Length: 228
Image (cartoon, rainbow, N blue to C red; front, side):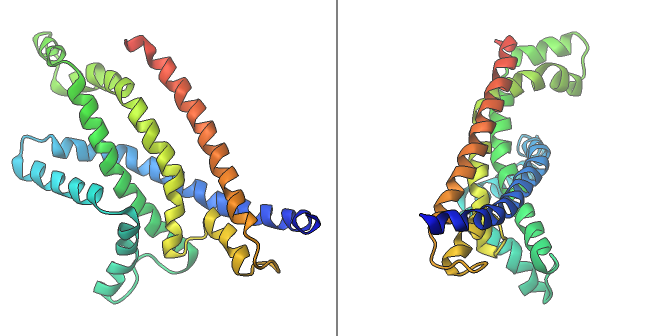
């Protein structure tokens, strides 16, 4: 017990650094995937069939393959083809590759949620908007969008909470996120070796962060109750 108390400040400092990397990846993914997912939705719902089919095939491939494999492909494949890494070297390069892979993966998942939300809005509302002289873009942004947001909050919340935990997969390309930091004390980091409790302790960070997000997303859902 005394040994753990002695190691605790060292471990917490290392885990905090790893968790900051986890937070950066989480927010970078959300900032990129939320708008990109909407663009992919427009592609999959396009009346131009080649674009629609192409987009749906991409979404099917991304949703049907493990994120871990996608991370490896994004990070290593361009370098193998071009003969030189495109992401740069070091931690910054690994972070950039991980962020791009996560954004593309989650954008595809979000696109299906968006599509379901848009299609759940009654067709009669679009027809009424056209009768009133509104353009299709006006109908989407002023009529459909807010109702869609209300409908997609629960499934989006699930995906966002999943994203918190999925960030741990970035260690497959040696990104030093929080799981990497905790596991390092098993192998010998900062004079500590064979300690497994730091790895288990990382779960506390995930639980607290997931709990905060759950509360915030729950409040957002309640604020949108006026659409019922």
